[in-house]
Image 1 (tube, helix red, strand yellow):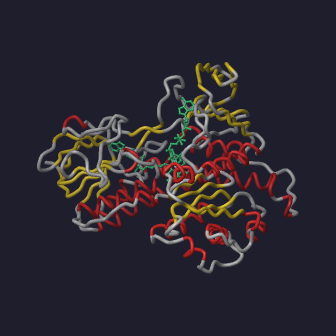
Image 2 (cartoon, helix red, strand yellow; image 1 turned 60 degrees about the vertical axis):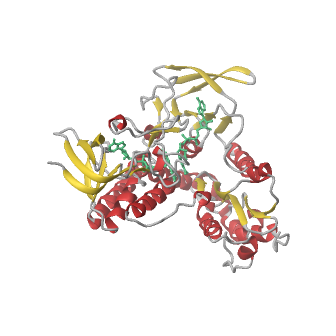
Image 3 (tube, protein in one colour; image 1 turned 90 degrees about the vertical axis):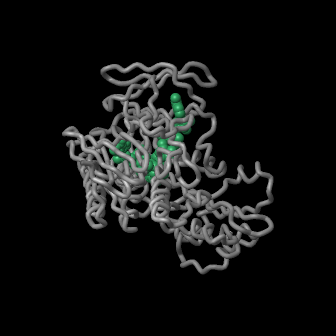
Length: 475
Ligand code: FAD
Ligand code: NAI
């Protein structure tokens, strides 16, 4: 006899766990099914984000940045440290504790909100008035029945047949987050977000890092001025090289390392490294869901097909997060999860896809929301641009981090903010103000008239807004 629920959520990543909690808060009897197991084989919620994504990568970025500061950044403050050393095992143990705290937190929230958490692999068996799912975790499979289903099965690293991942020599993100030794030379296939963030971690700890990317443009989805500034600072850092327009052609794994042959504008080239991280994008994870049994449709790229409200082609079946179209970001997955839960409960929520923020946690950080300058130019509408450089911001100078700028793009006629693009110190934290401003349809003048505490980095945002009006004060 199957347990019956109002809602079954498949996947307990930031999409699925948030959806399940919100469903339960709205009085819906909810089960959340998840197949993830930690390295010791224990079922843990949290998905990619908490286990091998956002959280562990940020833990390592933080640790490695302190080390880099100690080596290169603190001397200008007069701080001299002799014989600084890095205990990689301690750094990894700290990261693991943070992951454990975070996943335990989700398990606690499930209990608090009365979500039934069911570890195991979920798949569709049958549909109709209700949906029947099987959950298998190695023991006798169980069945659950639900009136509505939310598929939140996330994504997996895009497999490149040329580079079979063994997480010894050829790594994916999981392997690159648990290296026990700093590789002398780390090669990375893909100069995208994962390549840059995890490349930064190991570079700061002493690796000679080389990124290869097939694309000729660096960070093509970012604002080009921001991407150019990022290129300048990232490639200036000792130990990091980025080769664009590089088409990998062959790979050889030996006992001592990995050799990659690739073609670029100069002809055939070779990259020799000790380990190679493959970070060439991610693909939706629908394997084993048995979509055919209920006729759930996917699109040409393998995403579950959904409309703007995350409805699939089946009644009462929704899909959210990395498994559907749109940016593969934890906060986007959570927003969709919230909205779908509320929709199932009869409410009319909306996700504003135009204000989903993006951040790249390198040093300096990149952060943006809304339209890029190149997109606005291509669209042909009139806009005004204000740029304020951190070199004129007192707090950034005091921090010794006066790199980069904030750019505000505003509609020429209405002055409504259309995009905010930043590169600089802790801009991930500055971005929230820009998102709020855009959500409230603020004009650049609104930001320019708001008192910002002095001295703070946030003054740079106000100044950029004033610059868009043609009247910056401090630049
Ligand atoms: P996931 O988090 O992938 O969760 C899906 C869950 O479903 C998993 O637990 C999986 O085991 C489970 N599952 C799959 N199939 C089944 C099945 N059939 N039955 C049961 N369970 C199943 N995003 C950010 O916004 N900020 C960041 O800083 C950031 N850093 C990242 C760093 C790295 C190294 C990586 C790899 C990703 C990062 N991301 C970041 C992206 C972010 O992790 C994803 O966008 C996010 O996890 C997507 O959430 P999700 O709920 O859709 O899927
Ligand atoms: P990505 O899409 O950011 O970058 C992949 C890069 O690989 C691209 O530049 C592409 O041109 C290149 N590439 C593709 N095939 C290649 C090949 N055969 N050889 C060489 N280069 C190749 O994808 P990435 O870095 O794997 O990250 C996946 C997702 O995870 C991203 O969509 C991102 O949204 C998310 N993420 C978000 C983070 C954040 O918000 N800070 C951090 C890390 C990941």
